[in-house]
Amino acid sequence: MKKNYIPISLMCLSFLLLLWASASASSISFGGKIVNDKALSIEAAEKAKFVCAVPGKTITIKPSKYTYPVEYLIPASNKSRLTVFRKLKLILGRYNTVMTPIECVHPEGAVITINLPTILNFNTS
Image (cartoon, rainbow, N blue to C red):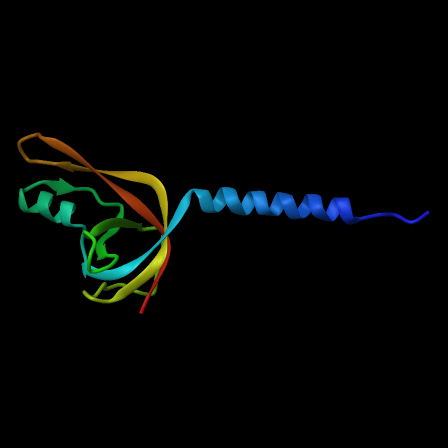
């Protein structure tokens, strides 16, 4: 009797496709030019004398010349060879759709929260 392994192979393939789709559904590709080595909203809060507890680095990029700048958080756990983000350098990567809250506290007691998308992986050129 000849055994047929095609249904098992198709089932494994469909399972792998499902895993890939669920992993890519929670992350989105991005790319553009780095316009600032700090998120503009964090920079504005710090100019207003807020102290922000940033768990890593923030950057601001401009996806194209016809769009507004977009801010991202690069967590401290995301190790990269790049330690200094130069302006007008190109960046490409994937970010998480879940926003990371960053709390900023003013010496007088006011608290603000800035939510930034978290970069999962990236590369620059």
